[in-house]
Structures are given as C-alpha cells and as structure tokens.
Length: 222
Image (cartoon, rainbow, N blue to C red):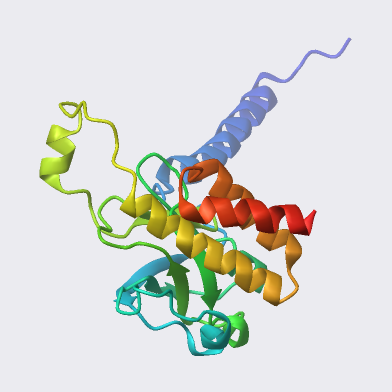
C-alpha cells in the first residue's frame, strides 16, 4: 500500500481550511437587516391620516347619509405610500385592528387600481366610528403600523380599570356602518361579501338595532 505524502496531506488540509473561511466570512460579516419591511410582501408605510364625513365619489350614490349622522366623520382615509403598489386583491386585504386584534370599522374602497406595480400613494378608505384612533393598527402584506400610539395615561391605568367595556353608542355606530356596507354589497350584487358583513354584525354587535335588520337581510340571502 502506498503511504500518503505528508506534504500533500498538509496542502489538502490547508486548502480545506481556507475554503471554510471563505464560506464563513460572508456569513459573519453580513449585517443584520434593519429594514422594518424586510418580511413584508409589498413594503408600505402610512403617509397621512384624514377623517371626513364625505364618502368617496365613486361610492356616494350607493352610500347615502345615515339620518342624524350627516356631519359625523365616519370615513377614515389612510394615505399609504407603497414602494410598489400590489394587486387589487392585496389592497382589499388591508384591515384595522384594535389592541385586542379585533377588526375595527369596514374596509370600503381604494384608488390603487391604476397604480399597480408603481411607487406611489394609495388612499385606503374605511367606514366606522373614529372618535379615538389611539392604539389602532393597520395591517396588510405581512406588515403592521400604528395609526396613533396609545395614550400613556390609558396604558398606565389599563390594569386598574374594573368597569365593563362600554357598549351602546360606539357599538351602534360600528354596527350601522357595517350594515350600510352590507347593503352596498347587496345592491352591487356581491351576496358573499354582504353575508360576511351581516354575520359579523350578529356576532360582534348582537344587541344593536342594526343587528335586527341584519338578521332579516341575512335570512333573505339564504
């Protein structure tokens, strides 16, 4: 049997060692990703927030004012800047959540249809009751962003409060908003979306006036 050449063995070991360093060094020197949108399917951030009592132009005919609430700022317009505006179905997937991750308000529309694939700002319009935006989060595309940071006093006193959460006017406003959107879907021949909103009203706001009408409408759709 031929004895291995000690010099040759040393050369091979040295070559293997250097090859290992070449692989390891990039891994060790690559900086950690600092981009907050690294995991986002389509990077975005909130550019501006506006409350208004005016429905989007294209939806005005289908969304007449609710009697007694004509001057209420029930529409929340979030101007969101995208590095690349995504597909329409992705835009329709945006939602607002409170601190308990419960969906708040109803997504109404957007103006990003003609901006797909481009960098720009898209208006995401939500309908609901917007007295206080503190703690609400916009989520979509694997990313989320606070609209307004929670008030410090609210955070400190959260554990001290033992009173049950208030219902009544807030729930009535949210339910009425959802009911209007359900009717909008019915009028525009989108029964599946209407059914989804009606079922949400019955689940989240069962004691409201809107829930009574929602139950009737849901029965007619089935």
